[in-house]
Length: 212
Image (cartoon, rainbow, N blue to C red; front, top):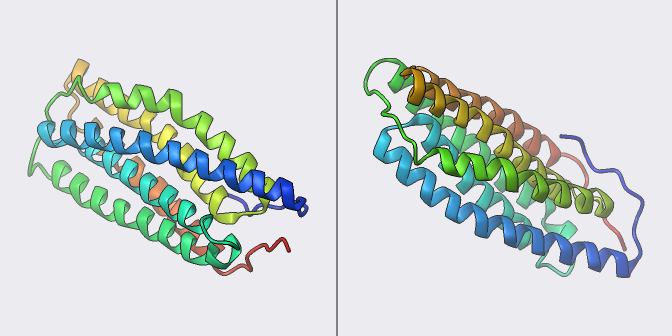
């Protein structure tokens, strides 16, 4: 994730970009609420670290998008940039801690994930939906010079990438009975979450971009 670098847009263009970001994060929140409910329900039923991590990542995406929506509800969004980035970073690190603990318990034999055909659906849909939302927000965030919008777009893209890991873990468990593949997919989620959380926190040490 890199800091956005963009020339200051005109006032009309800035208002358009801010409105576009609000629309994108609204769509992201709506989608991820549904995804989180399905993934967490399926993950709890199957004892799947990958699905639970995926559902929690969807909740993180909701919190991340909500933080950006809160930021851009202000007359001057730049004044809320650091707070929004901190909320995004904390959300990332929180889900990473939970997933690591759950994966450790599974790998230690404390529980065995069951097969879950139902959990495959949200992973497949996420691979289709999330990249488009990520690209739209990334473009708007870079043009506006918003580090939080860029961070949130990265989180959205991470969600799409992680759906691949989740899908692989579920399919390997379903077809070959490789129960270890599920917690391994969960740990992949945790690694991505830690990396992006730390990067979002580092962004808080930089001066927000203001367009007067």
